[in-house]
Length: 280
Image 1 (cartoon, helix red, strand yellow):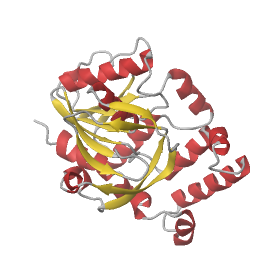
Image 2: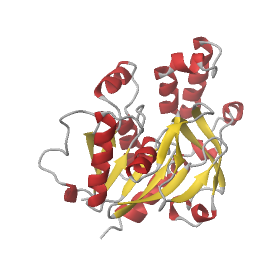
Image 3: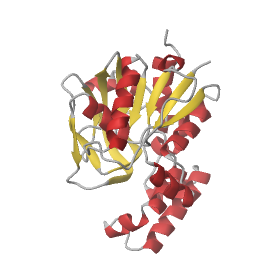
Image 4: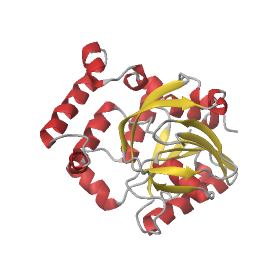
């Protein structure tokens, strides 16, 4: 039976705050996305930011067929246990030869773990939809993007960005906000697939995140008021419930890149089909 280990990137207090607002954790939204496409795959969760956490009892790295690094509100450049422990766990998974996929936080800690650099983006937060992500020549030829157009949009939320990839990494995609939107990163006995955006997210999750970060979103000028944020989130939820609503999709500037589940998740699907299911 195929089994994946999901590395939950957020601390216990951050997860508790999200639960109180009925916002799914990073690992929960990944579990939803993977189960929708591969219901037969078993999933375990490792809360890597929490002291005392380890691989689920009775299992070893060899019991897993892949390792997924989910999102986090942490900063990869901070010398905190919650950060350094996740980097160490990622190295352990890589030394075990597991296929690795990372999104957002995953790209960032993979880069730091292998000699790259991450910093606060001077352009501010990229949030909602990462626009006009374009593939490099290497990206256009890579199976990660076999279901993507040469230029596409994707759901995202991040403050930080990779400012320098490790020397042996391969840049696969960029946009005007962040030069590194996707990369291949050799680490240990494997080569990780990683993206800066969130192919695992859906519009429900995006609306929930606006609720979680409401004060920041208003303070940073994305919305004039909490009422405007609430109205927009309600529109997102309506579109999530009815993705064929062409008028609402037009108003929100969204198309099949984010409304079609398989296209939005296609990087994850490609990784599982190429690296996990064909492993061994």
